[in-house]
Length: 205
Image 1 (tube, rainbow, N blue to C red):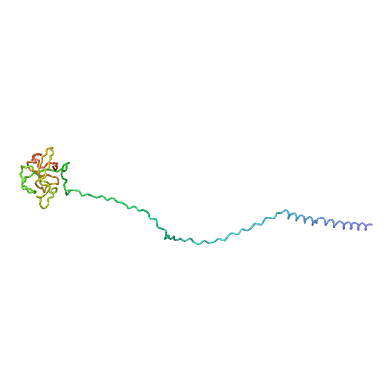
Image 2: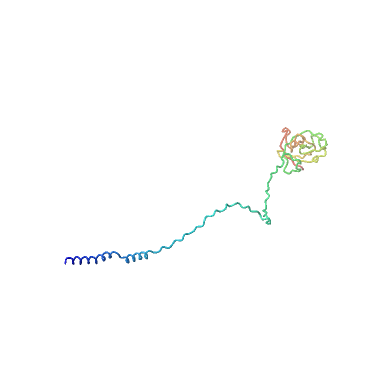
């Protein structure tokens, strides 16, 4: 009876062990889980690889000479000629030709002398109203007798305002341009002979 019990327990054990050993193995379950895991992971899109063009080395820039078109006429721009103003210095000093009949009067000095034979060819005395003008004014030629001023009448006015009319009969080499060398009688008509030299103005008549 005891043997039967042992055998019975062994048989039960034989039946139970395969069941227990088979319990933890679940191949189907594992297989489904793996597939499920694969289904849950989304497939990432593949990133296309962009191909960049290879850098090219540019040729150096050279200066290009632009040749003018031979058929094109060049534009002619108007040019202005610069003008310059040159100051002209007029000669000053003694004029070559004295102004005849200066109405404003020629200013100079009056003196007196004793007349005689003058450059105009006449012979005069100190009592006549005659006078000699400067050599610069007379401008005698080779023959002073032909001087156009010979015989001219001039009116001499002294500082006192007195005037006297005299005739040109001679030339005074020492006189200034508008000085008058008069006869004693003519000088006495406008000034005191003691003064010897007085300022005057005179005009041609």
